[in-house]
Length: 133
Image 1 (tube, helix red, strand yellow):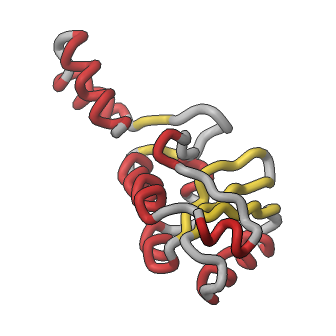
Image 2 (tube, helix red, strand yellow):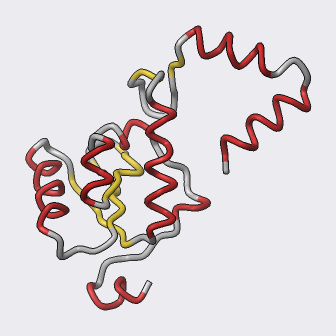
């Protein structure tokens, strides 16, 4: 949060913020971890990007790449914990396909696996709760 004031970039805590998987796809997982960056929201061509520190050249390169691809980038300073939450969502998109904004397509094998592991409402709730943490 202290860096936010120093650089004039807003701070955001992603622990309770939804991570949009369509935004996450804009920066490959390995590159995101390497640069300490993650795209976490997208509305049309406006992309919200979480960064640890604004003065790293590789972060600036990623932002410039997004801008070259036609996106308007809004950066936010975040904690390492917030970045880790975003990075953990890359696992969720390994079996998902890009979709229209606000929806997510999931492979049928994953749905079958979910049904097998959630025979009761209580088990389904436990699984969903574990996914949100």
